[in-house]
Length: 259
Picture 1 (tube, one colour):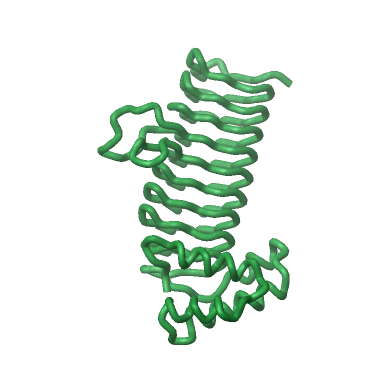
Picture 2 (spheres, rainbow, N blue to C red; picture 1 turned 30 degrees about the horizontal axis):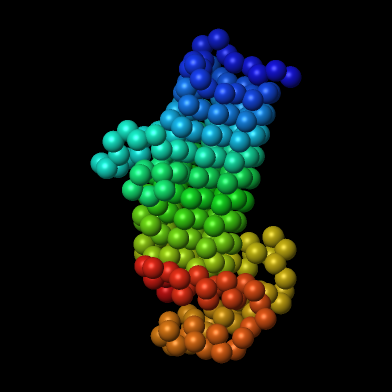
């Protein structure tokens, strides 16, 4: 099957479209855009800037990818947006390109579902296997690891990092880093245990879940300071690589983690 472009769509000279790509009515594809095989673009979509989109993505109506960042420091530099494979972008999503104040790239991995009205600001780096519900929004420079779920109306402050397999409840407001494996909610976000259901569905072993529960109690329920809790966990020398990753994340956090 060949690439199918609706007659009302605008494909600017220089744009590169792979095979089996479809572009719907009134969509606009900029001159510095590359789109991989099998990607489907609905009506009224805008893809602009230096934007690279991988294979088999689905982009629904009124989504804007690669737009100028909402940053007063941006002066038109040729920064980038890089998107992987098999992502779904539902209606009215905005993804802004990077800025030279960071590494100049907004990057999104593969196999992600972004529901309607999600906003991903400049210089964000997102992993794979993510689910962002309606109206979840990331400010600039946010880092999101793999298999994170953001429920509806979650707001993430700039420069926050979110560890893998974590879950943010509805209307959560995140101003500090979220360690991996945590279940958090609230305004401002606090922890409510580990994300057992999510990790179990992805095949995390019972042994690792038990070790993580014990580590969670040491960090959040023992009454220890964070320094004391981390020292205790390191002294126990857990065999779980997931616990080691949790400790590493907390120790490396430049802004501190939620408690």
